[in-house]
Image 1: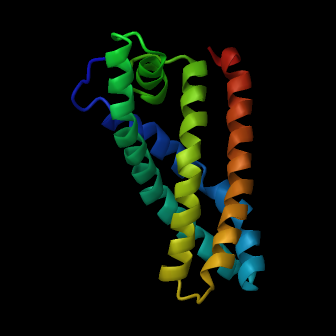
Image 2: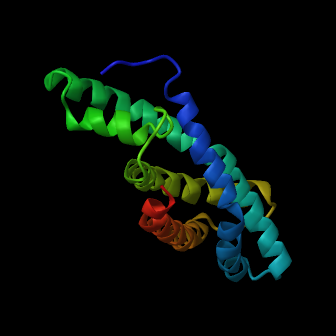
Image 3: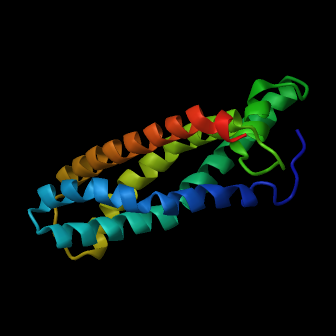
Length: 176
């Protein structure tokens, strides 16, 4: 597998762009969880959810993506070395996960990349949103119940995102 300088960096942009686009529905989905957890008025819960989700989107997506790239490079290089450049892992890396690395990517490939990358994004969101609420908002909260709330609200919002991805994929052939 050939490593091309700066090949991976442009692939972050689509993920960050769609992450920002998903902010409004995600904030609206997670606000009731925040409201219930802190027993605060809707506007305060909306504010907390916006702060947490803004932080996890703008910091978490690039951070999770970078960590994912760093961790998979040795795996891909090793797989390609032992398979003499013909490994499935190398193909998944170059064709699927490097969303945007090639001029034209099929909807199936984009879908596969998005479904794989949503996993590290979920975990980054859970921990970064808990951290943001606990450290930046002035709200005093016990860490464990807040972490459980963060897991739950992100589970619901990410389930929504997966459903949206499935619907987009199901209709992608009609757009081609």
